[in-house]
Length: 334
Image 1 (cartoon, rainbow, N blue to C red):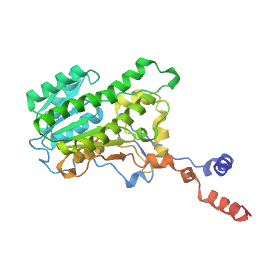
Image 2 (tube, rainbow, N blue to C red):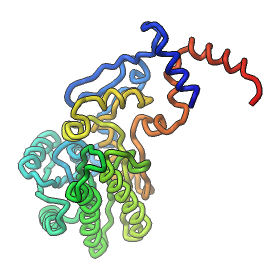
Image 3 (cartoon, one colour):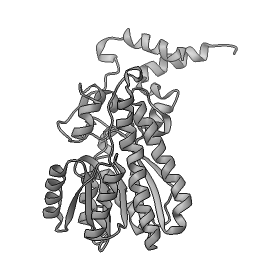
Image 4 (cartoon, rainbow, N blue to C red):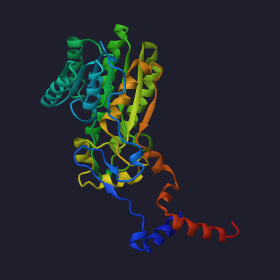
């Protein structure tokens, strides 16, 4: 990549008004983050509920990690479409507050069930409560997760277990417990897992999460093949950067990640919980009854932007292109 290194030197030699300097505007809280000029202006977020009213009428949805962030957004969408939702996590106070808030907003009952997905006994008790209160679910969303940034050489066995027990083992415990009951009852369901784009590529500094999320994807694709005959579908969403309070407090405590992320997202902005919720609702609905074993990346083009060897050339100005074209034309031989 001598060309790119040479370009970097060339760019440093330019006067300030000719250097490539993307202007960024950043929101506070969970507002959408975007660049102040296109392409973000071409791709504004649309967070209104996409599907028809009543799409999930008489359906039961079970969402882990449903009290905050993406889980709360997905619960809100499903509830607004008629589902009777049951949200689960360790913090019952947060769950009850969220359940009441969504119920008042949508007019549909939302139940709160305390559950530590790392503990099989807790999962079994939560599913027992789910079945006793509303019956077996038609939709199961494995959203509970945990993550933090750390050099891998500083990871302790306990740190490793904390993440992998929540993400991989927790997803497995919930899926296997509910799945076995569904098979016995001869009832089908749509399962959805929320992973991340680096589950596909791997990533340094979040190694437990990368390994666990990759395992979740393999779990889902394996069961899509095995349990389809029982009437169960399994799909995965890989979100790119979406600013939620809990995730960014652990993953971007200084705010530096936001600036770097926007530079590599071709669409020019971060995603929103509502956008993920719409895709989740579709994948769990009967409109997607032929979709199973799918892993869908939703990241504004970030993954492919990082993957392309020469994608850094998007920072080249017209003047620099003219200069390089002249240099290339003068090159002779191989």
